[in-house]
Image (cartoon, rainbow, N blue to C red; front, side, top):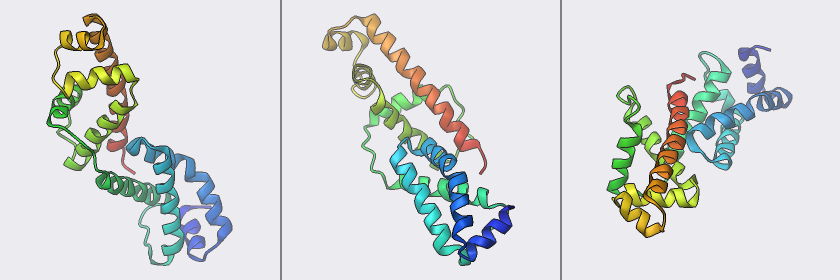
Length: 187
């Protein structure tokens, strides 16, 4: 069944067609949303809300291209709105860390909204790092500690500090690459 026929059936409140569409796109849309949010539960909620809105407002929705593209756009927009509502605690020093991390990427082609998403995701990524690595990253980039000060504070060697920071940058950079791919993919 093509996109237009599927949507026409949904406008007629054909539950079977709607359920089939939901089952065929749900997991992919959750994966897509999670690329923005890094929160599976919130991603699932957004996708479910998108389908609910599609069902409830089908008569008033106009789809120009494809139903799938429309759903991806709806999910993306809901993710962006969700990210705007999140209050992210930030210190001015995290900007230094962001500058170091994203210096490997050319962000000039991204909108300010996309850059905000990238920066908010960096903060979320830091929170997912192992405890010791997270502490080292925060001491270095949020508190401006020197390597030797971190080593002394945590009772580890300076080489351990350098290794942990390098590993953190690799983890964060790989996730940023995924975010950039998602942001540059038209849906």
